[in-house]
Image (tube, rainbow, N blue to C red; front, side, top):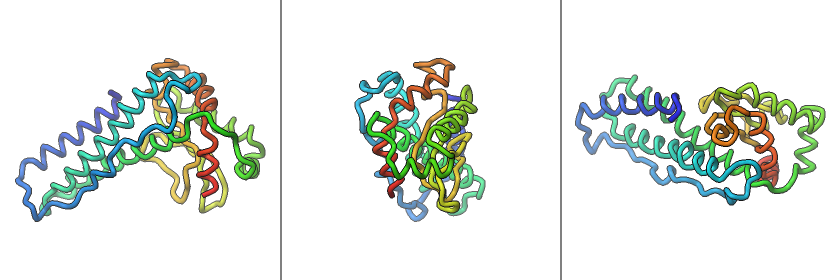
Length: 226
């Protein structure tokens, strides 16, 4: 278990113990959305990826993505049980952990969906990348360097379309809570060590090579077309 995951579970446990101190009544309960917290199936055969083992993919999928899904559901249920006279900090602590869990769930779905080694960069996306970076090679160089800046640490790298500036750009994110508003994710790369340590140790550069070899450009192109 990663340190931040341990801290997240600890915060949930503390908040839960506070909530359990008082009895909840039926009138205080809010509706939950348990159906939203279900694991999305992989759209590729984990045995078929180049350079990424089935073992690390399934560990990542079941433990990290699956853990986020479970945490999100538990936290939502605790918020629903929160009494109307609860202190604001109790709700605030749960809301923060809920945001981290839900974002982790969503970002992992982007990440797994854009794996599968299919297709190539479309002409329209190539034009957008060239307009923003000068060439597709310069885009990839910046994306890789941004990712390597997180090597040995944790975080995400995204290629996004920025609605505000009407351009594609690379975004650095230290954790699940960072994001660029008014942007649409086109390509998501998980740089938490759980994504590569089992296969590559601390060699984040080789993980990047494997990631690029397994990008499902058909998915990325469709995201851009939308």
